Length: 337
Ligand code: FO1
Picture 1 (cartoon, rainbow, N blue to C red):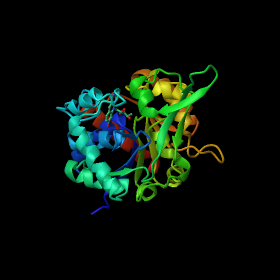
Picture 2 (tube, rainbow, N blue to C red):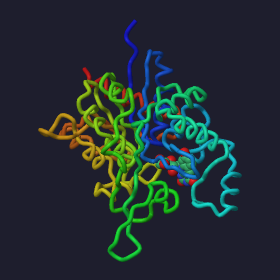
Picture 3 (cartoon, rainbow, N blue to C red):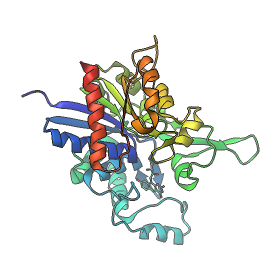
Picture 4 (tube, rainbow, N blue to C red):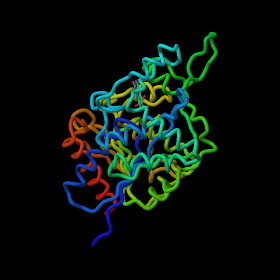
């Protein structure tokens, strides 16, 4: 019996969760024994109303576990927001965060376990006992790290930092961002099993999550970028940008903040080629771009050391998403050969 195929995915919220769901759909169809590990971004985490909230871990857990709100892409289906409105009635800030009642149970369990001394990875494992996501879901780190956004201050010429969630939800990423700071990153360590999941994988995938505040954040945890650069597995990414816009979300606002153009090609070059360029810090061996809009990027990217294929990248339903995952695995197979 051949060893199961070990696939490791570095994922953020909605795009990464939907891609991973398609990956599992594809793997189920092929009947190959496989083990999927998802390293989830925790830079979006926020402590609100005394609760520790992990948006990307919850989006991954709910999407893969069958509890996600499909139209929102985050939070629970059949959700109500009574606690939220009662908090607002007390005048408790902030009022811009969509705290769902069903979702609150997840935050209560997590906060209770963290207070009892369990690391976030153990908490996530416990929550997944209920949701059975079909993957091993690991936080990128058990240490607390938070993405903050540098925006204009109140006085002209001054700057201030606000939590990513405030920028993303309250301001819809419309406040010009001068950059992102991952608070706590320098002292953070990869969670148990993260480095090993990357270095012992047969394939490492970078799904169409936000390349800056999701995948980029995971790579900022000391040791993780090095693990991706050193793994013997082929590293294949899927462009989150189709044409000149993100498929969903506001990755363009994030890319603008770090001076990267909003294009499939610019994101690939931002991740960099793992092989070309001495002393580079590049990560990619392969890259998928959307065939209808970005096929012209294939030759130049391939010449730069990132083997690129143009395929349909719109995740319109589980079948099309499974096809994207199949294409990523096929490219990985070619690269490994
Ligand atoms: N996104 C919104 O646009 N509005 C919200 O009110 C909101 C609440 C929320 C609650 C829990 C959760 O897990 C996610 C939530 N999100 C909300 C999404 C979240 O801000 C983003 O999914 C990630 O942080 C970025 O990927």
